[in-house]
Length: 243
Image (cartoon, rainbow, N blue to C red):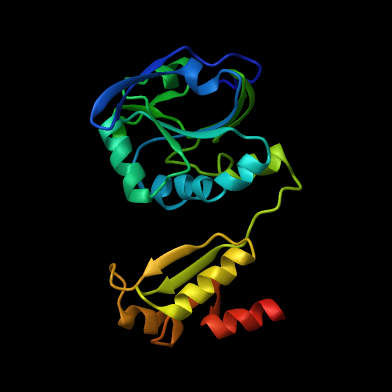
């Protein structure tokens, strides 16, 4: 049975990390002392649920967490620093601090080290999240002990709802552009003016006109999506906000 450690101090651990081609030891004291920190821990970098949902959503909501008193968001996995750095770059997770718990010391100290031998993983972290205030666990969301890799309670939205049930989450915005496009610049300025963060998808970076046409029925840029709804080009975006 995995133990909920609310009210207890986190384990005292030093993490060897690789930063700018140099070894840098990072301690839990540096990460947690005097701070309000959200931690989410997962079985492994580059694995499906971790890459498609768990990490991206925390990265996306980082600004909202900051507005609600969170100083940092840490992603912990029993992987080495090279793997964690590569995963952060692949995911463009600039808002998350990756913690390589390669020896499993932190995870073991939290009582969350489990056997994943059936998958060839060896010992890994059970999936969970927690809110830590000045080194003391305020709240833990531990995934239920079911076969496989359950992902029901350790997500970013559940944690945000605990911190502030009234927190406002911005719309999800994606913007297809191409270099030198004045209408794209106009759309980006308008989104910024409205306070909306957006993901920019540049044609040519593995996205072709054919793909754009298949998704939108159009071949021109920009093409804007807000919360999954296709808005259209820059004039359509202006009309959308006017309404």
